[in-house]
Length: 108
Image (cartoon, rainbow, N blue to C red):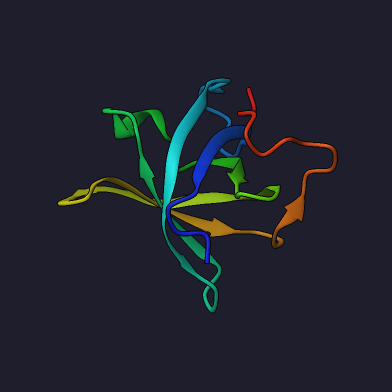
């Protein structure tokens, strides 16, 4: 459904009190969307998987041809595979359309 679309992943808040907040936007691409389990598998376009915390809530912005969608959730797994650096993202409350957003403009 969203496979191949560009994604900007941004940390919203830390779950762990000892974590370090990351205000960078991380570029990804949707590899697979599991609608039944509410998971998105994301290919991280960066080299270092350790930049993505397993103890944080993230906002995930998906650029489609017609709109910019947003969902929040957590990264529950991060691993390397033959496709690249993979993130397993658990969606919290579904998708929302970002009003007034141009999908060709990346969020910062």
